[in-house]
Image (cartoon, rainbow, N blue to C red):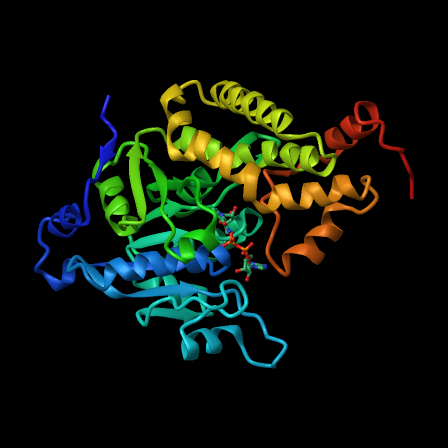
Amino acid sequence: MAPALEVQGVENVSQNNGLNNVDDVTNRSKVTVIGSGNWGSVASKLIASNTIRMNNFHDEVRMWVYEETLPSGEKLTDVINQTNENVKYLPGIKLGKNVVADPDLENAVRDANMLVFVTPHQFMEGICKRIAGKIRADAEAISLVKGMEVKMEGPCMISTLISEELGINCSVLMGANIANEIAVEKFSEATVGYRQNREAAERWVHLFYTPYFIVTAVQDVEGVELCGTLKNVVAIAAGFVDGLEMGNNTKAAIMRLGLREMKAFSKLLFPSVKDSTFFESCGVADLITTCLGGRNRKVAEAYAKNGGKRSFDELEAEMLQGQKLQTYFEVSLPMITLIFDVAIEMVPFVIG
Ligand SMILES: NC(=O)c1ccc[n+]([C@@H]2O[C@H](COP(=O)([O-])OP(=O)(O)OC[C@H]3O[C@@H](n4cnc5c(N)ncnc54)[C@H](O)[C@@H]3O)[C@@H](O)[C@H]2O)c1
């Protein structure tokens, strides 16, 4: 079993980032970030601060932007490139002059050999289908997306979706990472989960690692990804506890029981998932921060305070201003879901 990779300092990073021929310009890695929401923008900022000072990477970080027209009538992409700021999803933070916003998805990925996926999970399948066959043959991916798809054939992790649709290796990066805190360079940790390719994992660690963002890699891609996905379910329960003013002891109990069930469920889906992964940043630390400060908790609290009379969709639109709830499953089992709702949840059954 390969030990966890740990990078101890930035000096170490700049001397060896997993590439052999660092002087050869043609060997420089080119990074594209696919997504420019709150976390996508912060990830671009983090990455850009590293690519600009390391010889092994091209300075430029291309960031694909799902184009939007701002209330001013301007295009979001134009404003990002003029002001170096994502005024909608990360106002007040400079991304770095080497971040280039690009609204053309195919153009944004064409030259990159390191693809960072960071959009809400529900858009991932469509994005992969659009770029399939249009990326470099030597490209590698990492997913920062939290969520999974549950289809008739069974659950599909986002990293698997990327690997299967694009035919490339995909690692994941998850952790106690509330984007707005990392944007102002408050200290946090993250976990890279990789399948077999340790060298690729090393490159990802070096791409993200900064003195305020400590990255560790573990060989357990499913475990890391499931932690990042399932904690969003527990955070909804934590929000209910807050909305019903049940107190800190109850919330701690929800977190403990939630972690236990996250582990049981993960191992049921993938017996290879390691116990130790739940003690990495992607496990217990992400669970705690999401139950204290995440957007799922916030909206669930409002839902409970309103006695369940306002829907999650309505509260999401009102409270998150275009950001998305970090939903955990995209379920395409409408009949089974309906049977569950009616039989177990006792939701009134209305025809028409
Ligand atoms: N924000 C955080 O603190 C945080 C931290 C860790 C992980 N994540 C994860 O990162 C992922 C991205 O979250 P985020 O916070 O960057 O996004 P966000 O919720 O802030 O923003 C939503 C994004 O989706 C884009 N979008 C809207 N419609 C679209 C469409 N049809 N197709 C493609 N894109 C569309 C918007 O332009 C915007 O960039 C999610 O999986 C989330 O769970 C977020």
